[in-house]
Length: 435
Image 1 (cartoon, rainbow, N blue to C red):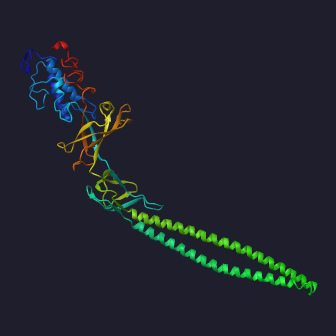
Image 2 (cartoon, rainbow, N blue to C red):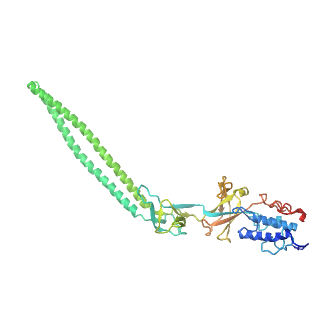
């Protein structure tokens, strides 16, 4: 029979008598897995254990099915406490001005990330022949505040400096070769012009001799004609040879100039490679070192280590604006909307709570790693204000008020909460005749 706030068993307890220990164990299990027994639905763990406990407790209290069980005292308000509450009132416990629905909150899990950041990678060397790895000679410590232009990381650049000096020497060598070649060509051109002038004079002399054909014997006149033809042929040949020689000299100079330009490009590349060995901060912010795979384990890079080109070693973040990146299960997307307020709690600092709102919600879901049939959606939550405890990659919990009318949310009368109404109808395993 029932007396006061508790129920006393009459006779040997049956199935109903064993319900209370199972209920208590469910509550302890819910608290053990870090789900608040205040009705928070944990999206990441894909379960509604806490909400089920609330509904089952309300049903037991309303229908009196816990025969053989005396309601114990509990530190958790309204859950198997001294006074059981109806489901409708139980759903309103823990309400705040920002979250008027209190217990009926959707809990998400994500990580903190900066709104503005700049990655720093090991520089890729221009040109060919460069080393595949670089040695770190200076590295700024993690968490250091830096200004724009401050040195972040420096690599050993002795090889790049030596390569730059070698390329510079090759460039200057080609410049001297071009100057020498041009001097030789000027000398050869002077000799060619002299020969050409001699041939022209020989043609003019032969032409004068031809004018004497009226006063000289025929044999002499014929010899003079042959001499003129020979002088003209030699002049024509010298002119053609001189033109070909000038073209060949120009080609030789052009070939040397190409080699000179190639050496100059190699010199500039080597100098730029040497300059890339010093990486400075592009923005004002804070240094965050990345973990990389080395020697079979994950760890941060250190001075003296060899790293490969293109490897990301750190980020420079702006700590004044942070946000939370969350993956949401497909079953919870319908309860979210852009602009929805959120309460954010850091796992590392559970006493610090921040407010924010949903800024972005992806429209296309990604395939879950657990099953191809499950999709997850990416969401971005903003955080109001700034705090020194907001650090990148910290785990954060986001509570969102689901409000009335959402799936699985009850009203003030207790209707709609996991199939349990104010009369206890529809509760799992509950018979109306048990009242």
